[in-house]
Amino acid sequence: MENFYYTQDIHGPYDIFNAGNFELEHGGLIRDLKIAFATHGTLSSAKDNVILFPTWYSGTSKVLEQAYVGKGRALDPEKYFIVLVNQIGNGLSSSPHNMPPPFNAARFPSITLGDDVRAQHKLLVEKFGISEIQLVLGGSMGAQQTYEWAVRYPDFVKRAAPIAGTAQATAHNRMLVQTFKDGLTSDPAWADGWYANSASVHHGLRRHARLFATSGFTPTLYKTEGWRPLGFTSGDDFVTGFVEAHFLPQDPNNLLAMMTKWQEGNVARMADGCLKTALSRIKARVSVIAIKEDGFFPLEDIEADAAMIPNGELKQVSSPWGHLALFGVDASYNAAVDGYLTDLLAR
Image 1 (cartoon, rainbow, N blue to C red):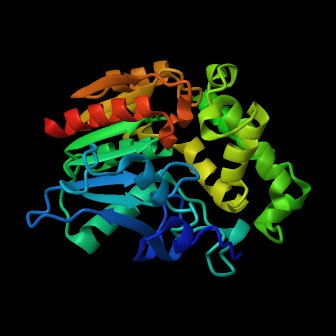
Image 2 (cartoon, one colour; image 1 turned 120 degrees about the vertical axis):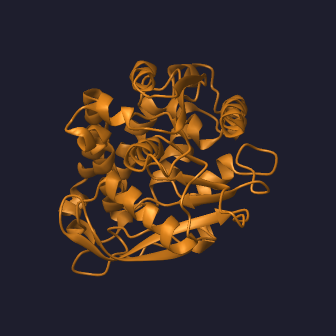
Image 3 (tube, helix red, strand yellow; image 1 turned 135 degrees about the vertical axis):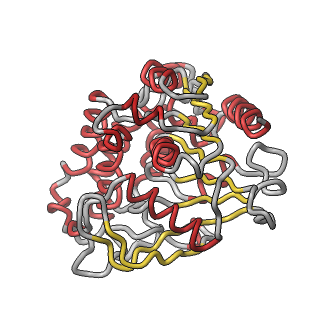
């Protein structure tokens, strides 16, 4: 299904890596898998200045660039070769909406975060000849991929910084994501994934957005009207103009594919179901960054992961924006995370 939201004009510039016919963890394959990525900075001759940053749910490489990359920041393209990689299903890489029939839309195959990370590894090795990365980091679903990287490729990763995410989706987190799914698919126009176009499912997209906003931000943000500096006139105006506006252009099948990966995120599957064993395989130095007020991935869950990681340490950030401080709208959050990343890279 053609969707003009997923274009170079809005999310570029980005490049495409052709990963070929790619076998999937759940079986089957994606034919002619395409991974969209953007790079910033110059790869050193020794190929020893690489930072990898996978996308989060509903985000793209452009969002990551705008929120985290810049001269004088921790992710400084004058120092590092920064690879911002779009996860499978996010609309720029191979996704339900852009896959040729008959494997498009609701017939898009089942994918996992492990599939993402294996495809990203293929990109780094085959496209750039990279054999180690100085840092892999990511927020939310990007944090889930960061854990996957550190456990799956322990000799490849020197440092890791999962931000506002866990190594294993908790029962509460899975239920929360299910409410987002249910809100989206409650729209009669959903038609089991065979809708005429994404705009026809706007009622479901709006319900999903409002559920997302309920726990994505903190009660304090609404109480103090922290959205006013962005130009919004009321809480409802903010949710409509900020959150609904973010999701309305996106393809529902793409969102569903990513949410399923989110729910199934679990590095313990690589260690016969034992999370502690899986995390003990990590050789990287790890800064686990938690947002204290996070309603998606609570502090205590992130703290429990950090305690099981060799060379791991917990870092905390406070923001009234809660989980969605990830979008870079809170200057104090940005400064704190930059400080933690700068310190990690200096070690």
